[in-house]
Length: 321
Image (cartoon, rainbow, N blue to C red; front, side, top):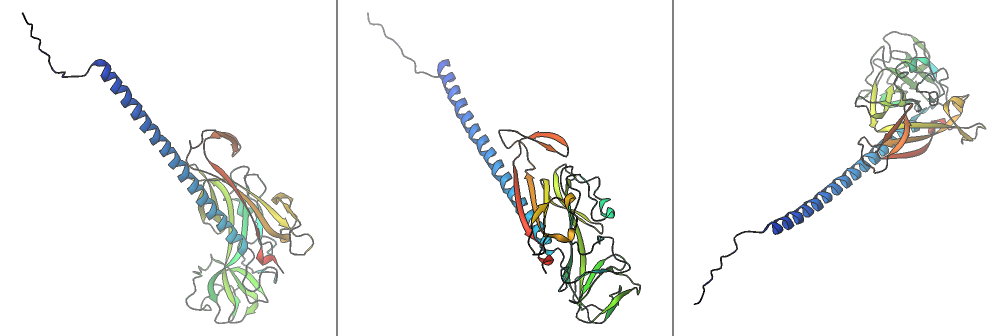
C-alpha cells in the first residue's frame, strides 16, 4: 500500500533566525550611531576651533589698532609736543600727559594706574591674575577749525560734515596745530586755553580706553574695553587671560632695551612698544578626551575645553621722535 505524504510550505522564521537578524540589526545600528557620534564630535571640535581662531584674530587686530594709535594727536604727536591740559581737563588724563599708554598693577585683579579714578569701575571686575592696560590717543572725527579757537568752547568753529558729536560738558577733546596741543572737556563756558589756534587746526575726540578681562553675564571670561568717560563694552568672549609687558627705551634710541611688567616701570614715557599675550578658550566644554587643569580667578579648574595662546608685539608709532 503506497503512503502519500503531504509537505506544507514554510510560513515563518525560526527563533534562531530571528535572533541572528536582531543581532545583525543591532550591530548595524550601533555602527551607524558610532559614525554619527564621531561625526558630531568632529563637527563640534572644528566649529569650536574656528570660533576660537576667529575670536583671536579679532582681539589681536583690535588691540594692535588702538596700540598703534597710542599718543596720536594729529600732526603734533606726543613725541613732538607736550599736550597741555586745560583748566577743565577731563579726568581721563594721567598725571604725565605724555604717558600715552599705561598698565594696571600686574596680576592683582585691579586697576589703579595712571589715576585712582580709573580704578573704580574696574576694581571688583578684573579677573585675578590678569593684566589691564590703558591706551590714550586722539581719534580723528573730521574736526577741522574754520575760525580761531582760544577757549574750551569750540561751538561754531568746526567744518560742516564732522562726526565728532560733541556734547558740551561731557566730551573730552584734543586740539592741535603741529606747534601746540591742548586737551580739554568741551564746555559752553569761555575758559581760555592760553593759546589761540588758527583756522585749519584739528580737533579730535580724546580717547582713553582701558582693556581688561572679566566674566560676562553668561559666566564666560571675556575681553572688555572700558571707555573712561563711562561706557563698558564686551569685545571678545572666551579670553581667560591677558599678560602684558612693556618695551622700555632707556637710552633714547627709539628701540626697546628690555620688557618689564607694569609694576616695574618707573617712567611710562619710556614705553615704546607693547608685548601682549592672550589665552583663549572655547565657550563650549567636553571637547577633548583629556582634561586640562589650571587656575582661573584664583581657583583651580578642570575642564575639557580647547585653549590657545597668542602673542604679538606692537611698536608705539607716536612715541618715535
